[in-house]
Structure formats: C-alpha cells, structure tokens
Length: 225
Ligand code: AMP
Image 1 (spheres, rainbow, N blue to C red):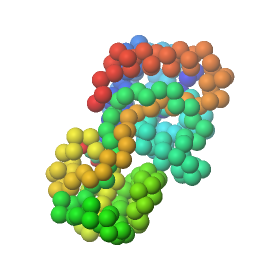
Image 2 (tube, protein in one colour):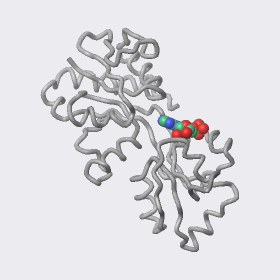
Image 3 (cartoon, rainbow, N blue to C red):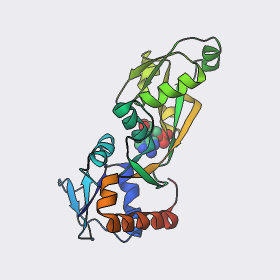
Image 4 (cartoon, rainbow, N blue to C red):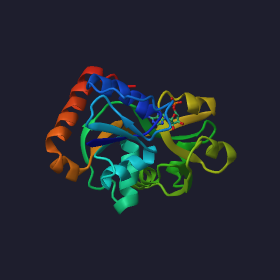
C-alpha cells in the first residue's frame, strides 16, 4: 500500500486533475465524506486528508509515503525541525506547478516602506512565515521584530499590530481590498511532491511508477494557477 498525504483546499482541488491525468480517481468525495483515509481507483494507493502544515510531518515520519504541500510549508517545517531552510530529509523530486503564488512583503498604502528601510528603522512584521521572513530581512540587513500570526495577516498593519506583513499573494485582490500594497517579492511558491526516503527504497517500483505518473501529468495538465 502507498499512502499519499494531501491537505484540503486549494492544493487538494488542484491535485485532483493531476491525479486524474495520472489515471487515479478518488472513490469518495472528500467534501462529502468525513473519512480521513480515502480509497482510490488504484487499490494500492490511498489518500490521507491532513492539515497543510502536517503534510511534511506525516511524510518525514513515514505516516505517509508521499505528500503534496507548498514550498512555503516545507521551508517553515524544516526551520522548525532543525533550524535549516532545507527540507528535513524529505526528498523533493517534483515541482507540481500547482497552487502557484508568491510570498511578498506588504504594507499599508500610506506607509513609506522605502524610507523606513533606508533609515534603518526597526520594522514590526507580522507573518505566519517566520523563517522565510527572518531570512529575507536578515539578508537585506533590515532589523525586524517578527510577530507570529496564524491567519488574516492583512489585519495586522490595519490595526497597528505591525508595520508590514509577509504573506502569500496570488491575484493581489486580498491586499487591494484591505488597502495594502506589495513592496517586496520574496519568492515564488508552488506545490511540491515530497517523498519519504525510506519508503522510496522499500517500495521502489510502485513509488517510482507513481512519481513518474505525476511527472507525466504535470507535463500534460501543467497549467499554473
Ligand atoms: P489573492 O487575493 O488572490 O492575492 O490571494 C491571497 C490570499 O489567498 C491570502 O490570504 C493568501 O494567504 C491566500 N493564498 C494565495 N495563494 C495561496 C496558495 N497557493 N495557497 C494557499 N493560500 C494562498
């Protein structure tokens, strides 16, 4: 049996066409079923429904053989794990080119970010992506106080909690709706396939076949979101 960990939401929705292109159908609708382990049309493959931030943990410890998660989540997981920004021993064979977005710095439209940086001010930055933000501002030589949030980052500059946020941006609509402007593009993000290295050795043939099927599906489906 091979176990693939997925999180509900955007990655799940964008993974389904990839699975389909790889000849795999889910036998139950995750939106209707309360089951957290879903069978697929391939008897030897099942899907685990987990929280996005738990995908790397399941794969790292072998609770799942493979998983699909954002580059952002992988970097933050590695930093929590060993302080690095590599990927905690997870093999990343494939950029699936889905759930594409970028991670950016945004501020209130009336905040003069360029001057604050030039003057060497200490910035208060709210984010869920503490490792990515820390590394980015350290490389720029900007002093920051990082404030960890778990959601609705856009509120932080509006309420005076922070001067800036570091968050995922896709269309930019959320920032615009909250009178925020993007002032730095930190990195491009997309969903990655991650693989447990021991599982790859122990179940070599079916794991390789699945990774190859995903690679082929990316080529065929491969429309960035
Ligand atoms: P947008 O308004 O299209 O720029 O989307 C921004 C909002 O969607 C923010 O709240 C982000 O945290 C979230 N978001 C954007 N892209 C992604 C993604 N690929 N995965 C998860 N959340 C995302």
